[in-house]
Length: 282
Image (spheres, rainbow, N blue to C red):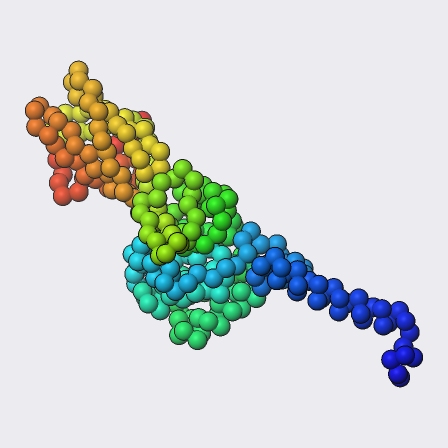
């Protein structure tokens, strides 16, 4: 059948479909949308919290250095995209881990990339919502998201990760949670947080048969404290890194240095057995 003999409605439908597809591609280019965002626009994939933008290898190396990722670590990569951060953690640092992303095309690419890199036995990838992904058992969480998404994730990170776990983010911070370290490459920055133990509240310290109360006021890893020794109230300057707490306290004219590991409602001393602490009421 000659084109001129085709029904007009069929020609119009074909032309209209081509126009929509072409317009969508040009719109994506005009808005600088990446492939994942364009697939969302076209209704191919679910709406994403963050459009995928790949992290340069130099920044990946810096992030893994900052978090001191090693062979004993399990890494969870949130918004993994094509899996490049997690694959580098496995290939270059010997880590294991899980990468999650809502975009099935990205997950397929990540799995293929893991096979090509020879680390498919050390990492896995799943199409999943990062806000519903369990973080329990992770030693390191990596992410390149958005400031608003980081803030939404913050309560889950603090609740599910063990003290001492590391979180490393490319480009964006987590509001008033001060990073423990930062590093830069050119104009790009990476941030590290070490999940702090919960020491907020009143504790009873026992040392050499004596007992005295200590009150800690905590905001993330920043801690202030006071100790009541006899009739004297002494201001403390505690340092908290992960599950390790340090402070000094003058007792009977002698400055004592305390360093312990926080285990829930107990603080167990490091390198000595002459003191012990428990949270009041426990």
